[in-house]
Image 1 (cartoon, each protein chain N blue to C red):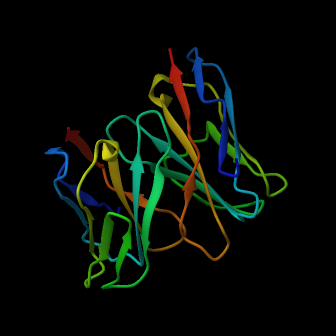
Image 2 (cartoon, helix red, strand yellow; image 1 turned 180 degrees about the horizontal axis):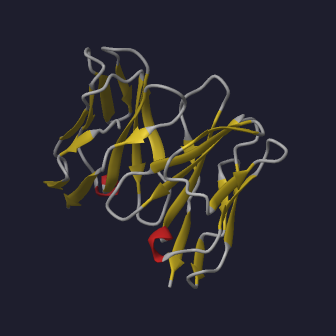
Length: 110
Length: 113
């Protein structure tokens, strides 16, 4: 089945640093979504991408839909303590279901 | 609050018992999804409704699992004869008819002992 490879698995960074994480797949996706999940809560949608090459920002977050439609990245600039959590990429190809990566755990040292 | 609502938030049950979870989607959203998430993994798709019609089911959804959305509004997910392997977070999400962004509820954490 379709799988998303998300990297890195975890990051431990200094407050104020920029963060970059990405997702790759052997399959083509029509939509890429990025979510953040706090412990014991459901994922919260951060950014949605619909077109190959699309670059979208949401505050300090920037995400891009890869030209090949097989990858996407998420950047967080000037990280702050509340950025801590697990970040998931999700892709949609056929039908309406989303396929999720395994997540990137972000920890921030203040 | 107009987000996706799930009930209960936590459920502990003995192996072999039946459990039922409820999801109330965002009111104007036609599409409703159920996902399951285990520790250290991303959510995995279980099933999808458009209005009251169940249009897609994952192979993960064994015959012990059943989902309904009788009036196209709230949905229920029932697990019969629970097993320890059913322990997970069960997430509900909804999206508008022409949108692909899925908005998730807070989830129901199931522990089977």
